[in-house]
Length: 177
Image 1 (spheres, rainbow, N blue to C red):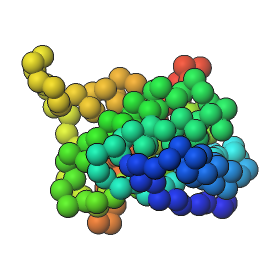
Image 2 (cartoon, one colour):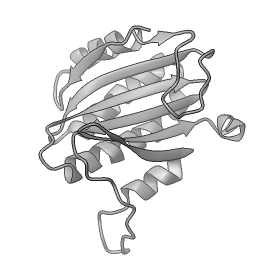
Image 3 (cartoon, one colour):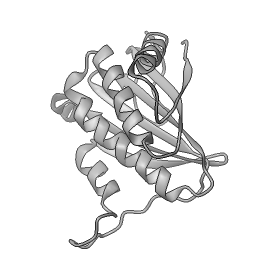
């Protein structure tokens, strides 16, 4: 299966974003592609993939949300855009805030049968933690938000870092498990 990786900056004209989305959307799909490791996805269903490097700086989450919107529209999954944007925004925001010394992350979107799996890989070994935020705190709810929107989520250790992932499904897909 062909995959393309495109760097995505936190800024840039909308036309360049369209070019990036076009490049990554139409080079990463194929029948018979294996699903993510440990996902339980069969290899007989078409899987679409987009993988990009994202610079961690102010505006990174906004750039990622714009990419999500274009990619999911191209994949004909517009109903999942708001939830996937929320998940991506929280995971990128966590990497910006809690991955010391990391300048970039790899964002990967994997689409299959009404489900989008989001991967955010960073070079930090610090694992995310669920926290109990008080009502008067403005931070500390990110993973709880992800957990409320995603069908499931988790963390995998990688050589030199970690992958935080979440799956967002259409309601009828959640029931299929």
